[in-house]
Image (cartoon, rainbow, N blue to C red; front, side, top):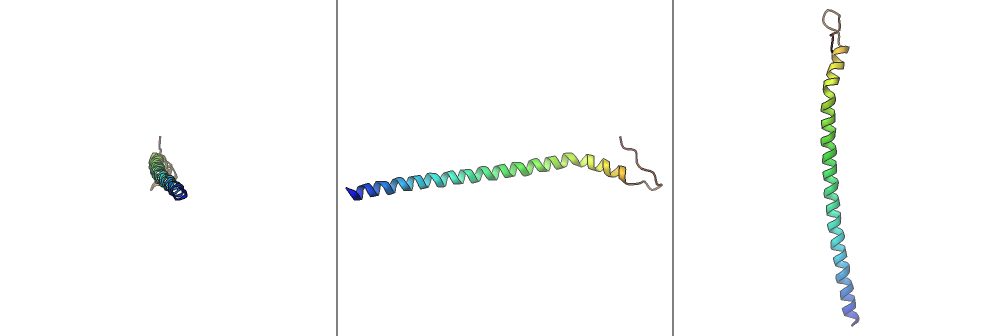
Length: 72
């Protein structure tokens, strides 16, 4: 009888361990997906800023004759 209880407890512990491992795998997958989304959002944000940077750079770079380019 005692061996049956021990076996049942072991089986339940193994089932809990398996569920915990599955939860961990899912959490890691969600983390990787979130990191990928954050990288993509950062790249999109960076590319959205590029035209403004280019315009700023043109304002700061003098033309060959010493004047600055007029950027609207």
